[in-house]
Length: 195
Image 1: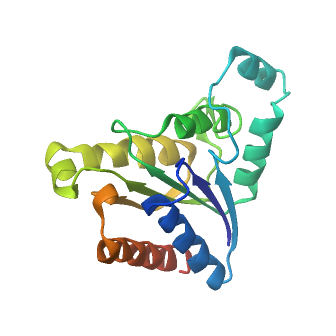
Image 2: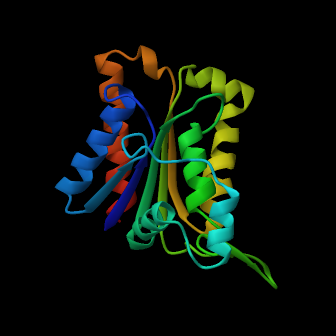
C-alpha cells in the first residue's frame, strides 16, 4: 500500500519521533511505500487566508496546498501522528486540515448532503499526551478526541478509520513504557494494513 504519514511535532527526539520511526520501519519492512510529511520540518504555513479560498474558488489552488493534496490523492492510507495540546490538534496540523482538506477536494455538498470525496482510503490516528490515560478516560477526553478527529475529520471526508491510538503520560515514559508504546504501534500497523 501507499502510505502518507502526516507528522506534527517540533522536536527531533522523544516519543512522537520514536513512534514515527517505528511506524516507517514496520511499514517498509512489510513492503509498503511510505511518504512522511513532517509539517514542522516543511515549515508548513497553517493559516487559511482569504487569498487561499479565493484562489481555490477560481480553480487556482495555491502550490503548497496543491502539493499536499497530491500526496493525499496518491495515498491509500493516511496516518496522523501528533501530540494532544490543549485537548486538540497542534495549530500546525489544524491549519493543515483547514487548508488541505478543502471544499471541492476532501468534501463537497450536494442534494443528499455532504459528499465524502476521500472514500476508499484507510486512516489511523496516533496521539500522545501528558496526562494519564485514566484521567482522560474519566473526564471523557479520550472519547472526545476520537469524535473530533477520527469522526470529525476522517469520517467527514470518507476516510475509513482503522484505529485511534492514544498514549498518555508520554513525557514521563521510561524505556520499558516507550517500548510498550512502540510495540502497540507496530501491532496496530501490521494488523490494520496487511489484512
